[in-house]
Each structure stands twice: as C-alpha cells, then as structure tokens.
Image (cartoon, rainbow, N blue to C red; front, top):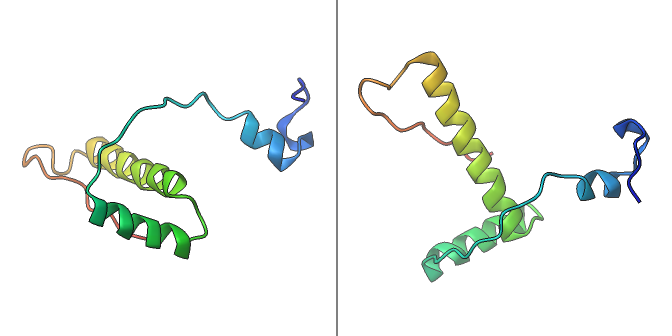
Length: 84
C-alpha cells in the first residue's frame, strides 16, 4: 500500500510500484536480434523488457547530451552508445 510518507520510508517493492505509468506497445523485432538481447539480459540478470528500457534510456541520455552540447547538431551525428 502506498502512502504519502517520504520515499525513504517505503520498501523497495513500493518504490517499484510507484514508478511512472508505462506505455504498452507491440514491437516487431528480428528473431536473431531478440536472441542476442535475451543472452545479454540473462548475463545482466534482467528481463529483456528491462534491458530494452536501459538501452533506450542510455540512448535518450546520449542524444540529450549531444543536443545540449551542440556537438553533432550541424553534422546530424548520432550519439555513440557504450554497453556497460
């Protein structure tokens, strides 16, 4: 049960429940690519969905950093992603 107390008093499970509402959509993906993502997710002890969220967040952060710095804006360069 969620309450109005500060987040530090909530359990980790309650913090997960209180995440922003997620958009549900269908993604068509090449089977080979999915298999690679599945292996990566297993290595990181994550679900494929969780791994894809991490990848997308990193890509958006990199894009914002490039946009904020002005680098690559004139050349239409894509940000470089680095696997952790």
